Amino acid sequence: MQYEVMSRYNARQASYQKEAPNTAIISITDPGTKTNSFYSQPWIVAILELQFFDVEKPKRGHISLEQAKEIAGFVKQNYTKVERIIVHCEYGQSRSAGIAAAISKYYEEHDSGIFGNKAYSPNKTCYFYVLNALNDKRK
Image (cartoon, rainbow, N blue to C red; front, top):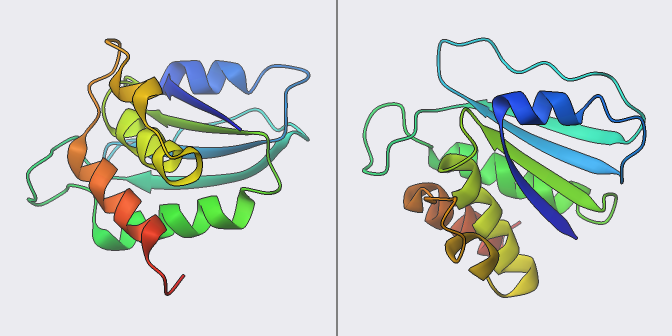
């Protein structure tokens, strides 16, 4: 499984590829902004659109437990259908990196590809909320 962290712009540009592996997209944008737009492709299996701010300490506008559960459900529902998961946020450095790291930790049992990469500064609230939601035995 490939996990790709991208900026809003790069995720939109990726959707213009004529051929790509079957892909699920987790699209994170700031509240009050337009959601990202993707070119319709047969290889885009599913898109989950969420809005929350890039803040780590729990406060108004950060990722909610419900949103983390939505992400976990989306990933579990699509994991066997796709070869790639793209996670994007505005800049592709924090929220998306935290979410991709949690998915990698859950399925691959490591998150070093994200935490070991200096290009990313994973949002730890996103990481722990999503990892906990993925580990929730009730799902």
